[in-house]
Image 1 (cartoon, protein in one colour):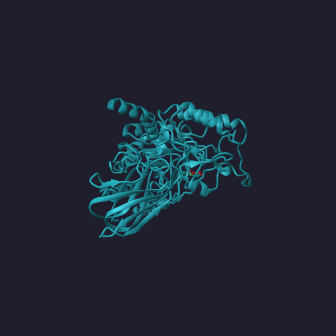
Image 2 (cartoon, rainbow, N blue to C red):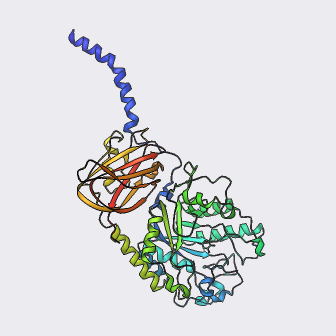
Image 3 (cartoon, helix red, strand yellow):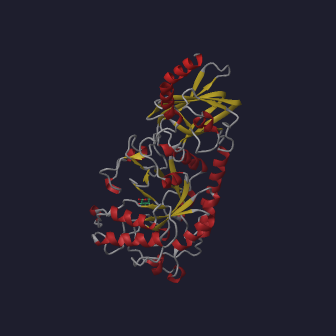
Length: 485
Ligand code: FUL
């Protein structure tokens, strides 16, 4: 009888047990993605972080920033061009790729294009038989670097520029440059156009045609422009991304160039933007984009470059640092030495992560399931993460280091395959008695990577408070460093 009763009781409880199990299921499952998301190509691109821009062409020899397309192609005559030297310099600098100005606004093509009469073929360099794109793409492949191209739609040389026919000419140019030199990771498209007030021809660009052509040759490519679609201009050329920097953007009604969103929007993105279009920070190591002997003594200092690193990579954007080859066709020794010093400074700053697996890391707001445990933020693996329970838009991660440490940098990353969520956060440290908490630093967005700088703090216990998020926060990693420089 007793057995029968307990069986009946169990049978009555069964529906509740099943129901409760169903209730807890979502909490054990990974968080649902939030908002616009990066494509696989965008995620890979974001992880490239820091790569080289190489402005090179007739302007290198004529000392101007914008050639007008009327320059004699014979001015382009590097005496000792060596793309392997560019690649080994980029590699030694810790960069992941090189983007070359294959065609700037003067229309001069660094490859013997069939669609132009203003190219290396018309120059004196190698008797008109040279091809910089062939040499550089090969050198990048050998060095394990990604290869990218800047091809300006604005062309002050081509006779069809300013007429509808030019759009097809430009599409053919893209087709050729992107079809003949192996994989291209990024196509840089600026929106520059002739200025009618200066008597220059203006073109109505057919962006749709350009994009189709690019993707038909390089399906996984990232297209840069003011508004993407792969990545966006960060809004200034100083190397300073917005402290708040969403990787989402609304592009409806906007165009690259004069029709682009306001600069502060480009610097900050849109909180609820409909597309995932992360920021790229382009800045030159010299005052100009092209090499000039007059800027040999104006190459940015290591301190300036470190500052730029913190305000670009440290603010959820990739850093595209321009290092213009000189008139020999080589990276100038002053620039290459500076790049190595910059690498050493970064390595020194980020040599010892004080938040290791030996620290105890926990959160009361953790999502159910070991897979989302707070300790994941210290395991050095981007693909494991801590996630808060659904609905928890604020949360605290408690950290106890194995012994007190002094630090002045917090590096923190969201797991962006699930979207960008955090809108504000701060860090606090406990005093020696461990009872009162002192503010250390605060920030707004995180995104793929955010690095906070603050005065040195010595503590064993600290906490990272997520004080605002659009959906339950998902944090991939947190690291603590002492940058003595
Ligand atoms: C701009 C160009 O006008 C500059 O000359 C430079 O190439 C810069 C990176 O993009 O749009």
